[in-house]
Length: 109
Image 1 (cartoon, rainbow, N blue to C red):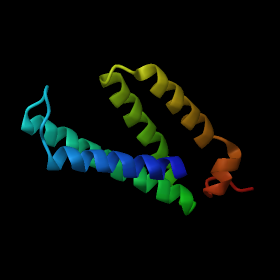
Image 2 (image 1 turned 30 degrees about the vertical axis):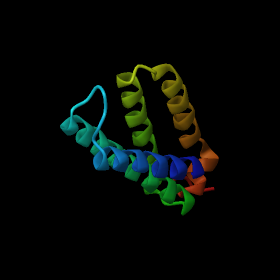
Image 3 (image 1 turned 90 degrees about the horizontal axis):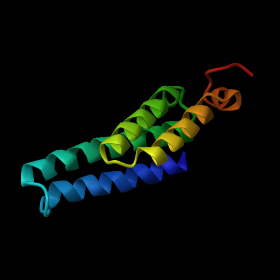
Image 4 (image 1 turned 120 degrees about the horizontal axis):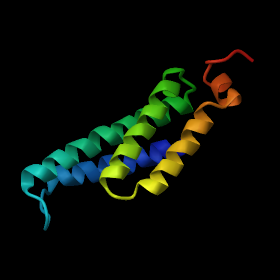
């Protein structure tokens, strides 16, 4: 849960930076705005997952794996999918553990 919160803050800051200063050697300003907007939305998604896990909200169990899917897709687009696929698999395993589902209220103890 803390990893999601930290990742959400970090990714949101990167997205805001892309929106504020759209300057780069390989992209036009409109491409930087698009990338910045995607990163802001992704950062807010991770913040929501982190908050939901911290407060043990049942909807976080649904939102967390989808955030992992987005992570894998972006990793595939960025040409470093192997590490992200491994991380996503660990997240899917963790989200499907009985004790974690019990914590979120998805399974009765």
